[in-house]
Every structure is written in C-alpha cells, then in structure tokens.
Length: 248
Image 1 (cartoon, one colour):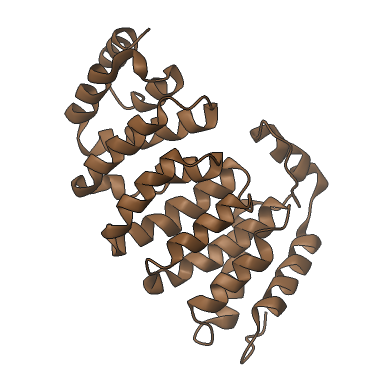
Image 2: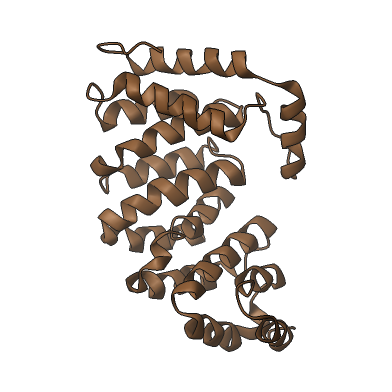
C-alpha cells in the first residue's frame, strides 16, 4: 500500500472495506458464528490479517492524522454490521492512545449506546485496549466508568468491567474494580456475569487474598458464572472450596 500525503477518513474507510471484501472467506465467516450466541455478520478475515491491514492503514496516515481523524474513522466504520470493519477501526484508533483525553469518554459512551459495538468481541477489543489506555493515562475517568455499571445498555455495562482488565495490574485501581464487579452481580445477563468474572480473575492476579476475601464476603450474591471465571487461576483445592462456599 502506497503512503499518501493526506488521506481523509472517508477514503481510508472505503479502502479498508475494499480490502476486507477482497480478503473475505465465506467458510471462515460461517465458522466465526460459532463463537457468538447472537447472529453476527463477518467477512471471514483472520485476526492476523486484520492486524496487518490496520497496520498498513495506520502507516498510510501516520504523521498526517490527529486523534480527531481516528475518531472520524470510527464514526464511519463502527456502525457497519461486519465484525472486521469494526475491528479495523478499533485497531487504528488504539494507535493514537498517546493523545487520548477524558473528553473521549462521552464519545465512546455514545457509540456504545447506539449499539455500534453490539457484540462482546467488539466491546472487549475496544475497551480493553483503548479505554484501558485512557484509564492508565487519566485515572480520574475511573469514577465515571464505575457509573457505567448502572447503565441500561448491556454494552455500556460490559464496558464498565472490561475497561479495567489491563488496569487491574495496578493495585491503585482495585477498589474501584471491586465496586464495579459488585454493581454487576444483580444484572440478569450472562455476558455481564462473564465480564465481571473476567475482571475479578485479573484483579486476583494482582492480589489473590483480596479476591478470595471478596468472594467469601459476597458469597451467594455472586452469580455462578462470575465465580467460575473469577477462581480459574486458583489452585484446584482452593477453587473447589470457593465454588462450594459461594454456592446459594
């Protein structure tokens, strides 16, 4: 791909879609559906090829684009139904993380509320990398993300948990992480229970004793799916014990 002096977001979006259509594989697209309970639309492009394409697209605009253009690319591609179109926008966007600022938070929330990220894979890829980077650079946004756990939209709820996956390595964020997880326990949604369990598992890598105490304190209030995910890293005897002691 030749590097252009100045490609506009709309041009890059058209180029991305043309490349995705060229790489499409109906067999792989059908196979991808097996990973989702809901129906999704796919071109059938493998993850390594997606990352390669995103890298090429970024190289074509590096030095010419600011974060604003990356946001515009997301506005053009995230509403697309195909998983890969969303993924390419996300992968280009995250390369601008050094310019992330708190003003992005309401923008991203709007995308989630509009269901532009309408599946667990897109939410997880976007939030774990991009919102995780935003939290790391601007810890003050953590309080706002904590409130997302009470939002009626399931993708905003899931984002409230997944955004803290990488920050969970930092003990500074453990208090808010446990608040988010506890806020999600009453939600009747398996995708939310899984996200809360994933978040707790990552928090447990940083402080296993704190995770154990948290699970025992909340006991039967913790959804079983959340418990199973949360205790995966514990030794087998402790894992079985925690599963039993938190049972309803």
